[in-house]
Length: 293
Image (cartoon, rainbow, N blue to C red):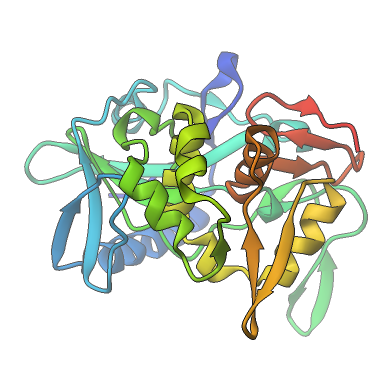
């Protein structure tokens, strides 16, 4: 059965929209996404998400009883209901996820989702070209690139995913993870890349917001995946307190000893800051509040 392509957006008046596809594109898209689903479902063991565990190879996380408040399954079942996507760069910038789906043999609707990175927009600004028949041709109109892998699947309230960080770009998952306990804060402070002068004081100033951020940062793996020198460069750009020091021969992040600077650092590590590529203005992403730099 041919798959349709939908977008989940930040626009409350057009929360779900549909892409009109030509027959040949729809056929190729169906094969492309079906192959992605096959790879996605090869995980042998499902681990219930608790906000702490990171899946190894062959494992996948899941949330049971996820509330599909956007009713993605209805769009899949009734593809003529959603409005057609508005082909403008402003509207494409509001897309947070691409999705498709079908009714499985068990009668349940299975939704396949990809987190949408705005860098995948093929902009009408400038001159976009593509290679075809030994020459480069101009791309007419706005477009996008479909990712090579799924971010998550949703079926009968069961949300499956490998990366919590990528999945929460699409959905609000705050109610499904636990805030960091005192032991979790101690574990965070004891990381090889972290330097805490007074861990017990850190626990005392760790309110629920701080503990939630620590849990999210731990789950994202950003401290293990992004070099400190890159963090320092970006932190300087956003005027974020980001002190480091040498511990033996290794550079480590020094945690601020006051709550205000600690929160700024944790918000930064949780990637809550964003700089508009158009206006070069810095924002706090959860509120789009302009940051004074």
